[in-house]
Image (tube, rainbow, N blue to C red; front, top):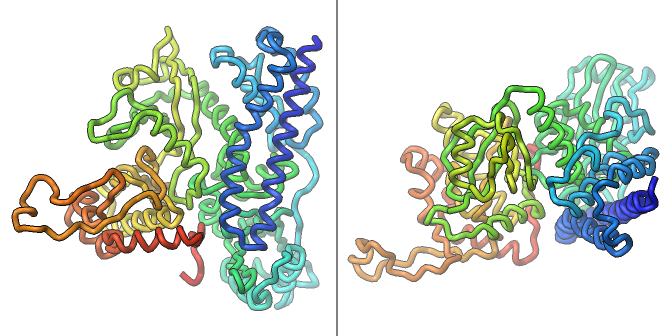
Length: 574
């Protein structure tokens, strides 16, 4: 092993330790922020933790350059650097994350045409989740033969909340325990609640996000299991309340959705916790689960590995994504892979006033704000290389026509210089075209709720056309087109002034001045809905969205520092 290779490996891992310590420090503060109801501080911490990764990568790159100079850029020695690094990480509990960190450092030093499995971890060298046997990270509570009587479940719940205590008091824990026991009996078959083998297993750390805290685990016996989540709220001036329990897999999946902000949770062995989550949420890919607990860069690694594996083992070809063609982005997809790939067009529609750099800023903004379950998470990639044979002729021709500076053909390879990936959804405009009357009503109800909840999180979508929203597999409406988003507090909501003369209403131009940030909600109905029936229905469901005063009241609440409640689960009181 050459000295430079060993030095590079050690300095790279030292930088990872520095990052992990800073990550833990931000994460560990979540408990105190919850106990003290410091909601705005929580939002700032969330954004800071997301930005931390790139900040630390830049620091390590600079440190390596200062220490090693030109020796650092001899790519021929990087296979040795990788071998030295593998020796250093073999005994770690976060070894899979350290591989992703190594990849980030390498990519910060070399152009992407130097990427190879010899120099970095395109494929992991770590054991799979299923083969890892490490320390337990859960607590178990068993009903037991002696507790299978009427109050057995109550005793189990009492034991749980004795272990998971906080410095802030519970508002009325006795009341909550009675309600939780009733809910558990309602959610599970009667015979299960009397089974001596009934066990509740919970992850040892509490998960925090926005204004909530969550105990996450499962309830099971020898034959069956159900996911189990206890959401907790801290009502300022009242105390902590257990807001219920959730055992429905679909509802728990939504709590861990790609549309949510990342949890703050102390995780000693990430792979073990992700494996635990995958057992209770088998429909979730591990990439999404890693991202959900804050390790979004490793989630990106797992996504990429899944993608190249899919391409290598199927005949799937890229096609243009169904739906109305975008005026700013061109979107393509793999039919058998639940993701869309978005590239910025070289020329935008004349109606669009944004420029390329603005679009990039908007998409990056989505990463750091509270998505409140209504905006799809994105991953940004540079220099994707795919076999040309993996594109249909029509798809490749369109990409080369609308984005020639981003998409190039190099022999048998297609180079995509820059793109974002998002979860694929059914565009809302296509969904309502083929939906039943009841489904249309549900979709438009949720569409309005999506707009309201984004506004509550200080996000104004800008272009609210149905084509810019999608419907998830759980039937939730989610916004996914970000080139015109802005903070709600940046918008000037106005009423349309009364016409001065009868001729004003007939004029082709408005009789009032309009600034770039002016929005007139009264204009929304014909803009959003060409279908009169849908327009009337939406007015019944969410007519307040057409009133400038509604938006101004939300702005006032945000300016006053209020963090408005948006729950990621159905509450019993709703």
